[in-house]
Length: 279
Image (cartoon, rainbow, N blue to C red; front, side):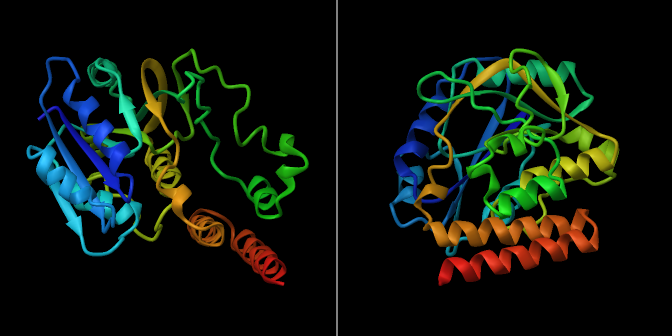
């Protein structure tokens, strides 16, 4: 099997339908399988997949397991040489998959690769990020970028050229292609599983960080492109809950990768911010 496409979905039935329809129209000489992991949606998403896309391998969870754990459910069953973690609110072009597979096969140094992402107006979505550092995440925690957005310029790689192929620190998890053989070589592990300590947020940068630590590489290429509707599931979550997810994942990331003092400073700052917001 050339490609295993893995889609974790939560309450975005219409976008999921468009996603699967676009995948059906993909062209190219390659074999593929598609998994949809439904995280206990209440909008009939699982029924949609069963009735309209019977060839798709559906995993219907009875509770929301989060992004990392749900992806891992399919990764454990996937047989593809390449694994594509694809958000449900994505829409590939007919040649997106064939172009990315051709590029990835020709570039085995790329353990993880991503393509050009565009929004509904055709504008490039700036997805490349540097690995999170204490200063930029402290600025995020304290909401400083709302007044001084330039404090995140380095973290957001604002000068990155999205028309050129390049090795990067991390890419957006909405179109996240993993080379299984490359992963096995650097990790000595069969399955490229995500860290399930993260419910949502930071899991893809954590995986990129792990790849980098093991001597692998993450690459961006404009060879192919894909439409990204950007966070349709996450937008349904209330602002307070979103903040909880972000803070929880940020702290877990720094507990794993940062200095002990960095973790504690961020934890204290988050506690103060949350207390202030509640008042």
